[in-house]
Length: 388
Image (cartoon, rainbow, N blue to C red; front, side):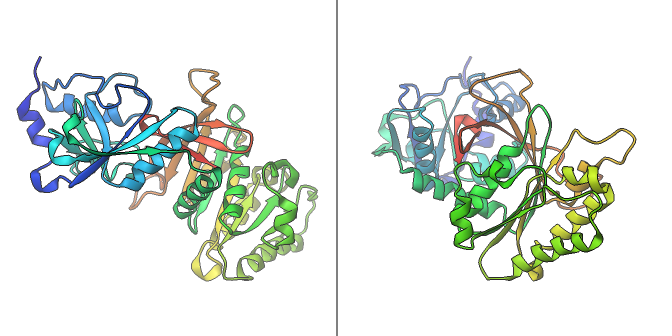
């Protein structure tokens, strides 16, 4: 069955929309310049489904597209990460003459015009162009062999990316028994320290040493980059004065210097059993004020358990989530155990405008794997972002 030219013409890039050059990351596989699926579209719906399947990391069905990027740095980052996760022995970046690629589709344009939907963040597809069927050899201008980047450079790059995403925000980490989220507490603490933030770490449930793997807490404290507040021994009869002391410690920490500031709290759910829901909500509200520009402009990251709410009480986790800018929720794999993927990270962002829920109803789903001192997150098309 042949390509429906009328349908393809409706969505393809016009001549003035085609970049001068595009970049393709070529892996070891010989088929990486040829799509696995046939370009057969009998209806507009079939075309849209094919594009959405191509952008869906979970999809296992072949699609008729080959991905390319207009931004060389995006292609280079992707190549380095393929090498970094051991999925390729040799990677090349091909510079392509876009005018010789034939049918070309802009993912950003398709999303903007409402033709397709995707859960991917915009920065992952804004420069992506889909080539139909295959990349012809006559379109290749040059080849660049990519060698493995140093761990230090890759760590700095990933840290900068994520720190930029979570700037002056209240980030809630929501976990469950089947998918413990403590690894994210360690991850964010390490991330902020490597990004040269001043970090205040508040321990409510576990000792600070519990999160110190791969991070030299003592050295950071000596440099006065890290302040650790151990509240694991807080008594249930803690007075209002003691609570006020904690508030003042956090506020003073955010106002000490001009450097970027981040606060990480290991488990606010532990406070619920000691002081009640109302006290916890008041505490989180106070922490949110510290993200405001006039109060220190800090990042605040806190962990809460999503499956500890009692049926007879007001659900605490949703109330905390409503105050968040971003919620990262860990979920176990629906298919059971896997040695390559340990769970799914659902990313909810604050919606714009009015709705019944202030958070997006359609989260971005990112499969993850926990390593010894890092977490590896997998994205569309097999791309992996290692957050070190």
